[in-house]
Length: 173
Image 1: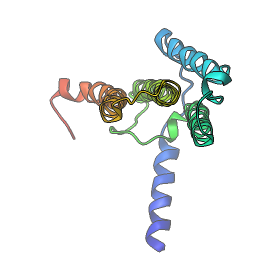
Image 2: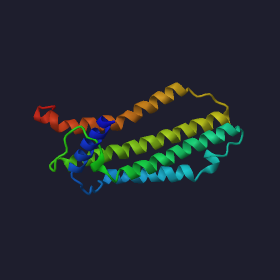
Image 3: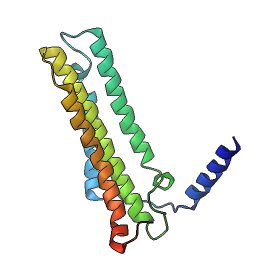
Image 4: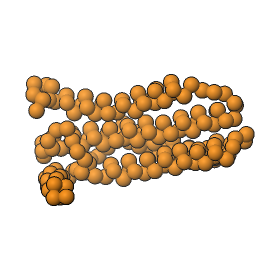
C-alpha cells in the first residue's frame, strides 16, 4: 500500500510541474470537432434508424441503444478530457519550450480518436441495421479488422509526430 501512495505522490508532483497552457485549436482541429458533433447529432436524430427496427427483435433494439449510448458517452468523455492536456502522460519530458507542441499533438490525437470511435459506433449500428432489416449476413470479421486498423491511425500519427524532433536531433532518450 505504501508503494502505491509513493507512486501517486511522484505522479502528482510530475503533473503539477507540467505547465498549464491555453491551446487554441487549429482549423482542422475545429473541423474535426464540428464533424464529431454533427455525426453525433445525426446519430441521435434518426431514432427510426437506430432504435426502431421494423423486422427486428427486442434484442436488436436494446443492443443498438447500448451502442448509441456508448458513442454518446465516448464523445462527451473525450470532450471533457481535452480540457486537461497538462494532466496527460507524454512520451517526452514536458518543458515550457515543448509544452505547446506536445499539448497540441496530444489534443489532435484525442480529436482524431474521438472521430474514429464515433465512426466505429456508427458503422456497428449500420451493420446491425442492415443485417436485421435486409436479412443479409455481412462479414463481421473483415469489418472489425478494418475498424481496428482505422483505430490505430491516430495513435500512429501521434507517435510519428512526437518522435519527429528526437529523430532530427539524433537522440531517443
